[in-house]
Amino acid sequence: MSAGPLTNDATVLEEVVAMITDVVGEDYAIDLDIDMETSFQEDLELESIEFVTLAEKLMETYGEKVDFTGWIASMDVDEIIAMTVGQLVDFITKCQSESGEE
Amino acid sequence: MAVVNANSIAINVIELGVEDATPPVVMLHGIVIDNLSSFYYTLANHAASAHHVVLYDQRGHGRSDRPSSGYSVDDNVEDLSELLKALYIDEPVVLVGNSFGGTIAIGFALKYPERVAGLALIEAHFAVEGWGDEMASTLRRTADLAREGLAMEKVLRETGSLPKEGLPALQKVGLSPEEVQFVIQWIEDNSRRKATRMGKTAKALLDGTTLIDDLQSEKPLSEEQLKSIKCPTLVIYGEQSDIIDRAHDLARCLPQAELNVIEGQNHSVLMAASDKVRDILLPWLAERSAIAAIGGSVKNDISNDGIPADTALLCDRS
Image 1 (cartoon, rainbow over the protein chains, first blue to last red):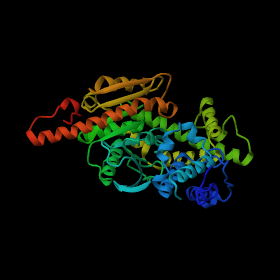
Image 2: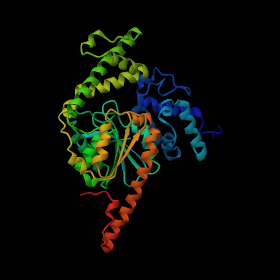
Image 3: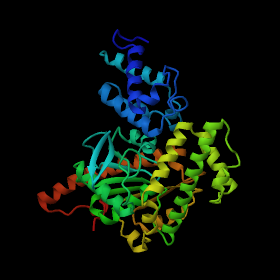
Image 4: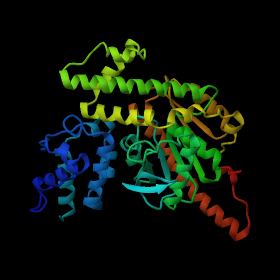
């Protein structure tokens, strides 16, 4: 991955984990060890409405450079449900490096 | 995601897509174990490349308020009406309704025909003779299943094993072995946290509000009422749906109904065959946009030189 100095997976992972914590609540998140392999459904046990809340937070945070709408539209229900944190982080990083900015 | 106050409750809304695309497309989810996420996963993002899409959690669902009363179809119609006003949407909209969302869409089209540019009804329920009692009985049983599920999930958490035969204390409500099996499947299919949260949400709505009683009081729609819905209507049902007769009623009564029956599918067609639903719905939505564009120019024609519009192209708003 040709990520720029400010757009590496570790930074984005940290941001995504903070948003997940915000969605599921600190009390629940504290027991979770979230890394790139963590899946939203199997591991985090996110309800679909929580996943949507997270997606909305991501859109607010990253703006138009990260086309979540188009990305979600490219997947079928089963793929969305099986998504891992790593897939999401990679997608964000890729969009950021393609846009050439942070 | 935004919270909008409308009809005296806080409604959780998501708007996606092209802001000034017309007509706006509003998606209405099903009842109890549902919220805006089902459309978010299946249709909303897909339609957003060309349309202004509005999704919201109906009262008692998702992240909207759960008032203790006011769950009739008309209450839901008024929520939608007030929500559109709060969003400054005053032009006719396309309503896409799944299951009970279709009930609300039909109710809105009957009450506010001039505000509807089209209806897409997926596995839509609407009140026929006996529907109120049938819905009430189904929902009461759903409440029983939610209680059973929560109790069994608690046992699983405490003892590490699932009581496969169900719980004796809950057998007094007379769950059949099939229903106990259904609950077990539900617990096994969903994570523990998710199953618990879904069960609690369902229980809070069914046991803590007047929803069941309100729906039980719904009056059946007459054939005349159905016939009065004259806007373009897309009708999508699963071939094996338990309410497939509704599809034929709609096709027979609504002058502009286009019937689509999806082979091998049942009431869950939106989630189970979302690609097939999209293949039917997206071209139909594109048509609505094209007609809205013509409608706009026709309106100009009227104001400019008094030539009447080609009304065959437009939704009859009489």
